[in-house]
Length: 187
Image (tube, rainbow, N blue to C red; front, side, top):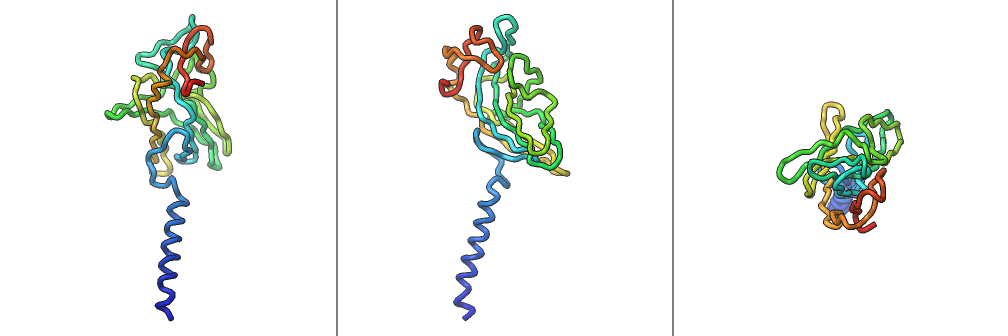
């Protein structure tokens, strides 16, 4: 009689392990795609959009990059019970190079700023800016929780359509007549 129930127990155990693994989909995962939500510490991040720009600002106050400006629009939600700060972020290229987020958001409407603190259950949306060579990157998001540093990477693919500077549009906070700036997907 005991032998008859062994296959049932093995199937139930396998199903429980599978459900547990599916339930913690992010746990142990290090790389995500744009548009996927991921949690690092108490903060939940989602990179919504990437834009390349040859300059920021209008005709009279234009900021010219050393390479090219890459703007990332993201949302950040504090899922914790205490106020939490969003750290400055960095980009990594495929050759081991690392690029820090620019600490001057002049010319970018909706820039996240330098002092980024979120109350519990608060969600903020904004732009972060990098001055980098045109390439594909991974956005590194890290946080120290207790004695352990958690880190994830978000793939930021190079969208060749977003480099087409003949599409006249505006970056957040820019002057629509001063600068032709690309937008992803032709929006």
